[in-house]
Image (cartoon, rainbow, N blue to C red):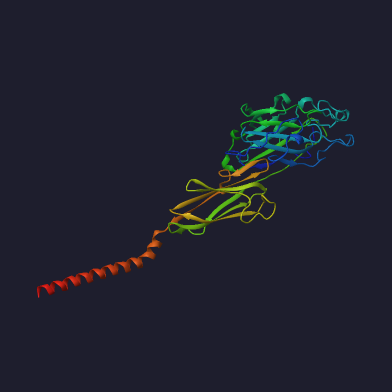
Length: 391
């Protein structure tokens, strides 16, 4: 039985995938993750080399096929498909690292260990998700401890998260994508897809993200440990909009100030704020902001606040402005409302007729006095002329 030098976990909180998401380039699988998962929209989570324990009788320089270089994820919104690539230093599933994932080396056999063929026996590669972050995993994908590579599936999670090989529950055929290949010297990495990702059981866009763990292990590779990668990201932003006045005269103007603040723990690219005026598109605020982009140009860094100023906005009636922000987290996942409730704010500017009346009243009173005086003068003159005629 393999020693647990580390549980092969990747803990990842990703931005919500419901709604209108940017479409990343669709990876073309070749069995080589480093070649297939490149460029914008790919989330790469690195690991350390040589962190999988080996027995003392392993040949010098041996690196287990459980030893991961990194985990890579990419999401294609148009296809609603998640692409997963596990990049290993050797051949994924080649527990003893001898270049043959389907056989057991003499030194491992001497330890009563087995490197099973085709990810068979208890060999497990799994990726599993807590989509609503309630502390219970919802979905698991990969090869379980009770099948081999031909049994690749996506299923409901049912079991212990620390024994994922035994946690494959009811299969979900509508979500089961394609496993590219049984890892080999020509196709050394583990690549697969999950279909209809936004509709997986447990999906909840209002949560603002999800958690995913990945696991690679065997219960029969005696003396060989399991790898571990741990990563988390909690992307979050706060959007605000404010007006220089809450009341103006009709035909007056206000200055609007819009801010986008990164209160998460991961930098965001392509930050922007859409401003709606009375339910109609008004402005799309993008880089560069008026102020705030102090570090990497075009990147909303952790703790950074971008500010835009919109001057002399005409107000002819009571007006509502709504600002909705967004940004892209690694992996091409969109951070926006309603997944992140703080990504929307509004302000109402009222029109104030009373203020105009305050200005006009003295003039109205003066005009009324003049008219009244003139009318009285006319009446007096008419009265005098009648007296003269009667005399």
